Length: 391
Image 1 (cartoon, rainbow, N blue to C red):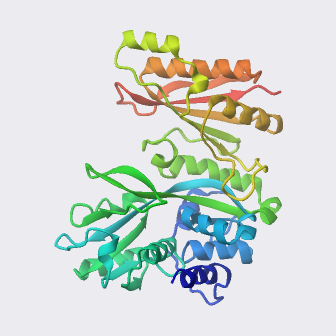
Image 2 (image 1 turned 30 degrees about the horizontal axis):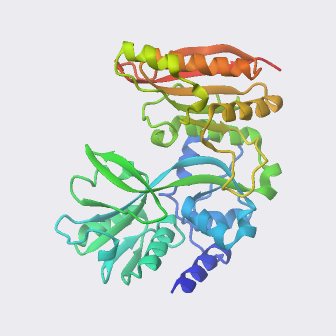
Image 3 (image 1 turned 90 degrees about the vertical axis):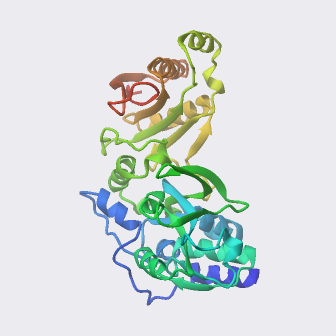
């Protein structure tokens, strides 16, 4: 069975039929179309992640959107193909749920034996993920492949069916009060807690990326690419980037942007704050996440070692800045911090001092640290923009 599924996966990715029909809506590519303005890009609508990868590997597609489990399997089974792929930017998180009718006796994946399961279209990331889980659990069931909107409509009219969902959690908001959302927890998949309509769920989650290939790197229009990436910061899933949903100030799309998410140390009162500040050594903080929003890093192989610096030490992040500043002295840094005002300002001051110690000539602060949400009174998200002097 396992060999059959792996063969099917390989067939889907590398021998995709030329006669695939193109769906005109319901695809993640629509997100890019909405956010990109004044570019030379043509947006093609596809059946999903598998076809996306086929288009950049076998055809003339410049960018593709695909989820992590597909990339993991390619890396494991087709390393020569994985070495051609490069992550341009993280896009969003994909949450995995089973959706059942309230009177259903289904409580998890193992209960799907002999049932009717509605999943995404053939070639979609949802279908790929379900095939993998079905294979690992030896589930025998009837599968219907439908686009999401049609899948929900069919599911509502068939109380014996179950909907398998991989995607943005916000699309589940209107379903949650009327149907049962069943979290999916499987070995090898990361778990994460989310809130839907004031209810907490812990379910499997995986990342979705924008990719290109090494051989197409020099063909890409850097100006177009930069517009895509900076706009992603303005319009994409806020939870993916820094854990907040409120809109931040529009980011200039002409400048190379670095985006830092930093969680501050929590304190309960001013007296404790003074004690903590005295003992804090910020090089030991591991809650810094740096997203370089420009196609400038060429020193990684495949996607596992892409530019994404995740939960790194502050000094490691500084070294990344030093390297990039030599090529692009006009880059800007946007820091999103969380905590009380006094904590945020102290935290930023430590970052500035680290820049100075590393001999990075930081320039004027474009905008002072201000709460992202005006109504915030206690622990808040703060935004700070920094530019650098020419080297």
